[in-house]
Image (cartoon, rainbow, N blue to C red):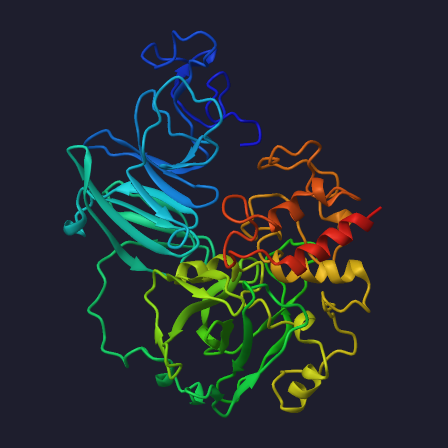
Length: 526
């Protein structure tokens, strides 16, 4: 809310408007019953305000309740029951939680959401409809809504001022950008990735399938799970620029099924995305594996093993045609095996070898999809610029892993902590590994800039650009201020914990070495 307009009813921003459009020749007329018609300085068109980004709203034709899906900013997604004169809090609050509580509030009390989802489960809510069809009688009267990023569909019932039922209906691979209601009350879903309409119907009986592995030892990925010895065919790999994970070390592996081969630099979507490097296309059934180790007060400990499983999706080259599912296995205290984590994720505190505490986040399955996005080409480390090192790609070519011979010229990231390499290349490599998966065109970041290593910093739309999401009371704050890391919010956010921190997911501990690198680079910028 860079304009701080959410609580300001002297303009039309951040509001739901109510006007009579059937008026000639004026165009529209304000109903006399509108809540702020008589309030001096208020725009009379406003029906409700304090809304950040309503993504679809609809009336229940039976009750006349107005329901709205509200996309949050940092932590929450909401469903609101919109009332006459209602204040929904933005940007004093995000849902039922303080956001900028010091800001001036509007003239009416802040109302709470009816439903909230945190970003461990939802990322970009899509409002729907109250169901009044005949095909799914068990859903009659329930409000149906979904999440764009996770593909999950939920419902709730509301009566006598409270939610009396709230449940997940199903988990899909769809990017649900909208719901639609037919004349007969049946609901349809619009899938952005596949470019298709889907009808909401009762699911057929579930066919009996082999049980999903509940333990890491049941996956067949390791010849010895206890000793962390990979099974034959599980290929270790190493990257040039590592993602900071609160000081944890990582082992990375790739499993290509059967005689499958990788299409080298074959993925270009989404288009247009100037400067974005091409990605690889993997055969169906590919599995990427990453185990996290932390030096604790009881020695080096395996914390978790994350698995990403690739499935083909019926999309297209413009918007993406891959789907990767993420799973987390949490290691037991005996370090003999790891157990599949519940879809909601979990937190646990560990003591480091130096005595400091770390609150480790085991990600939910929805959280996996927040970084592993279509614009980022899904798997962040399995690409040319990360794997082009120490003859690694040449060895994979000898093993026959690629469909075609490697090109002579290939992209390569610098090692951010190799001081023999140019400072700017090191800084760009660090930002590429830690920031670019969100801060790329359509990558999910709220700010309109790109941190691609393939572009010049002058092309990022960051240098001397004022921040769009608050300045932390820093005079002269810019996204990047040459010569002044103290005024550069890209650096500032790296040094924070809690609200305002970047990255806001996947890390809770400041990377002092990485922050120092970026500060040095900014200081020497001209």
